Image 1 (cartoon, rainbow, N blue to C red):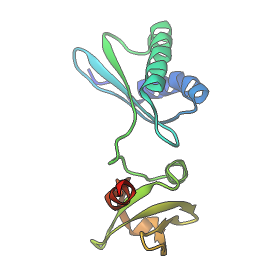
Image 2: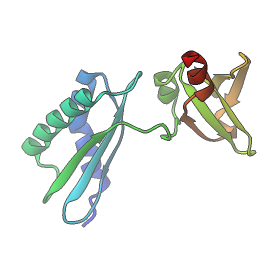
Image 3: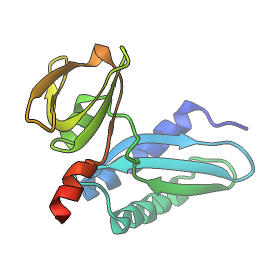
Amino acid sequence: MPQDASVELRIWQLAEPIADELGLDILKVSVGSGHSQLVRVIVDRAGGVDADTLERMSRGLSLQMDAEDPIQGRYRLEITSPGLDWPLTTRADFERHRDEWLAVHMRDGRTFQGWNRGATDDGFELEDAQGRRLDIRSDDVLKVHRAINWKAIVKRKK
């Protein structure tokens, strides 16, 4: 039996004080269906999230969920951080990942890569490898995600 949005909201509310204490932002809470439901909480912070912090978040939320019992039946709890392909969509996303290398896929088919220089009123600013700054409007973007600047990595190793 699928859970409704109120269960996900309740889990978010239980997770929020723990995430705040650990300096994490909650990006998403989802509850699957089936015999052993998967409860997935995706968290992030500037600089990324290490395994110890994920474990502390998992332990704390597990205790809260045992006490509050927001889910009927059995469930598996998974606390994870987003991968590189997680889309950046909000002002908070761009601020959290300021100065990181991004791949920007435009609605018109063009693709840009560069350093995230932060959110603007209507999008964000990107600095390409040559130091040129581009103002990117959110309305023109299909998807933005973090990427790896392989050229910079290779250059550092030389």
